[in-house]
Image 1: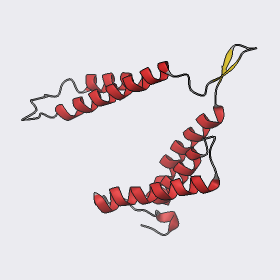
Image 2: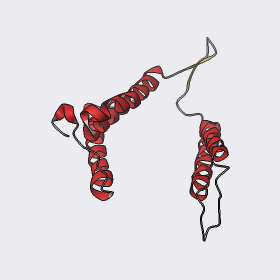
Image 3: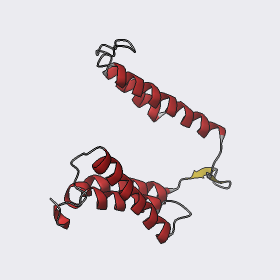
Image 4: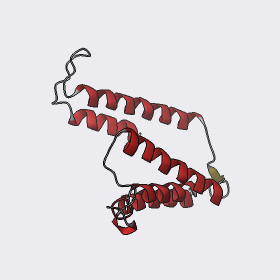
Length: 147
């Protein structure tokens, strides 16, 4: 529901921009297409969540749903840590830490799998953003001897 709401909100914010046509796009065309894609993905997630029960544990005695607090906390901490660490540590260590911590939210987490995922994501970020797109993102920040 959140994805659908955000798509509708962003579409409403960009309603003043001229859309144009597919052959001659206006400044509002691409944001509107992205809003449509976001809404479609939100609808897919919503329908999938309604159709499948998943790993939700229900305490039959108390008639309440057991919320996986550890996973929610680890993923939230990883996002906040990435935002705080990207400038002083650089893109590489910030992504590595965020991926490692968020992977610890999985029930199948091991130190080796977490480190492997972090290394692959750091390498992928370097290949796409720094090498492929040529963005001036420092892989190491000033705290680690980068610029």
